[in-house]
Image (tube, rainbow, N blue to C red; front, side, top):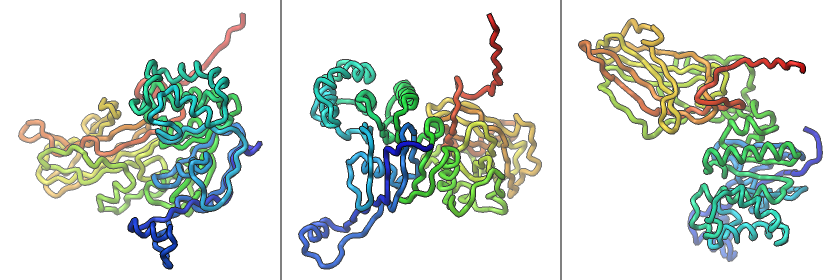
Length: 429
């Protein structure tokens, strides 16, 4: 998108000095040390990008990439070690909870404090006060000290202030994740209004569905370096490669399906590399049959727990039989984060019989399907069951074994998409 540049980041570097002992910091500050007593840690290294007027730009990356540091430098909370930041327009920022608020003041006092810091007079804040209070919708708590607020109430007030002071540039750093679903919907509706009004939005978020839906362009950071910037789809694809420790710069992303990443692999850890595993997985069963490994393979043949809605993917489960098993059943189930089972299937439902299930036998079951669930976070469980002496027996179950993120730019009502094909015929009067 060409147009007026409202944010220009040039050669931005932020270096922190890390000291092993507090006294080393003191010696350094007093000039009493001739040798360097600190290690250099670069949160950002030579970052360059522009944001144009009217753009909604997202910044993504794994934890520790420097996303929040960039926003704090742009908003003036931090100073860069080197490089320049040029901002042309009035900024309103919603950073981490507590930024810009005095915890001892009431919510109402903080509204005036924030407005004054941005440069508004009391009369200008008075004119906007009703809109701020209506959007925050925290009732009489507006007269209580904000230190008594829940995180949800806090972010409601902070966002209400941020969007109702007529910002030309709105900067948001992940803070919306603590709000309830209805408030988040109201905030994203406000984002759409801002975009229609030609205002600029810069947002950091781990919610890849929101990034894909609302952003015109995405910047990908990794370990303080800017890897690339481009369309949301392309950058999310590169981000998925980072999660499985692949170099997305060296490995060109194409639409062709890659070679099977597990060909000839017998290492169970390699199956799970890059997946978001649950360290507190619930595991039980008598282990007459055992789930040795499981994985998720996306539409491009990569191991990934981030799947795009509307694409095909595989769930693969490797089972070892320790005793003779009669008609073993291998299953998977998706649940939402509230614990409701959304969907799942097994080899019995799909009429797939496992021929060899004696001691020492192994099998790999692959479930190939399309992802039609709505965008969001899900938990994936696995099981191997069967019959012993005619009695149904649980051999091995792994409940909530890993997380699956579904990225979607179009959600419908309910748990999954009916993939409707819609036609409209307009009749003339």
